[in-house]
Length: 200
Image 1 (tube, one colour):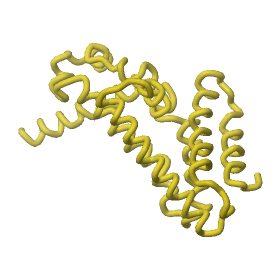
Image 2 (image 1 turned 90 degrees about the vertical axis):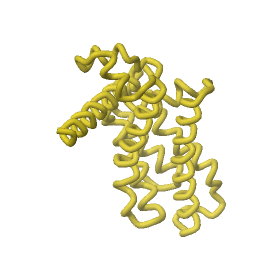
Image 3 (image 1 turned 120 degrees about the horizontal axis):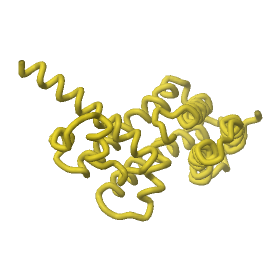
Image 4 (image 1 turned 120 degrees about the vertical axis):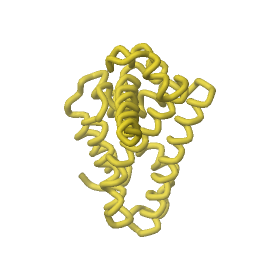
């Protein structure tokens, strides 16, 4: 019985977090309320809050789940590619795919919450910022190693390339979600290659 109860509790927690990330992609993390999740999932408020203890803990759980989903969608497909340009292009293409076919109803979770919390203080702001910085370090490392491998010009500024590379998927999300531009993913792929000086 305890084993079954633990498994059920884990499934319940996963269902709550999955719904929370979906809601956050549309309404932001501040739109993730205990009452809304309880209503959406057919649960009591006590059943929802009992899994986390507070709204802040629920928001952090949503961030963790979204981080894992992003890594699996964007980094994992590229990790086995050869270091240098093949891996960097694979990252870019996987990122475009993630934004174009997001696992959340509101589009890219990270575009939504980074915009929501860019000027807010507090622990959630710091958590969003920390996760974003971790990903930026990975990208900068890959760009720098691609330059070192001779696949990119030696005078290319890694920080400038990082800025441009990172800006494209965020702009892509807006083009899709706000403007409904069906050609935006192809444009994003072209833009990423131009940043890297790759002919399309």
